[in-house]
Length: 211
Image 1: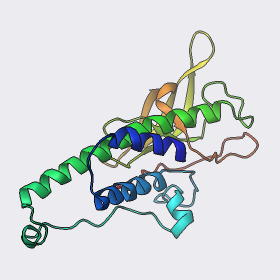
Image 2 (image 1 turned 180 degrees about the vertical axis):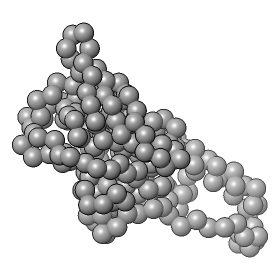
Image 3 (image 1 turned 90 degrees about the vertical axis):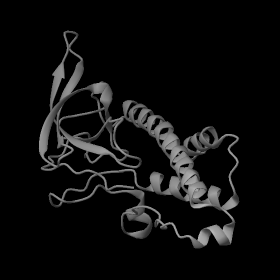
């Protein structure tokens, strides 16, 4: 995990010329992204959030760093214009979004590979069973957000291998909907919520909060 994050940070920042404060801010944002990933799902009520590293570290979900509104006093104190500050912030978001895309892709592949070689599940298709809570691949989600769903049914191809699933999830408008997805678009959570390979019954789907 740490090695993957460091590699993505190096490739993202590259030879970018950042001040010490800018570098520290980016590292802090990266830390929030890593600690906001859903580890597992604990069923208690329909509004329950997925368990994240932040819950284990500080007991709650970390949203993001506090934003600072532009103030003309910055121009005099730092000898920089508001326009230059805005341009710098756009560049900041570009770097962070670039890191997010790189790390999300690396992390998702690692999740699938880890579960594929796990001895706890015998399903050959990425270790996904009916009733599992999974991550749904979605390139359009903002930085730090994950879409989760519950596997309701499995579909086999002519070769008798599982090729697709039906997933219950939330639509962008917040309505519960059912999607049919190829198995390649789904990733098991980092910590399986099953016992001895048997899937649990889940009654709801949740989305991770914004970062």
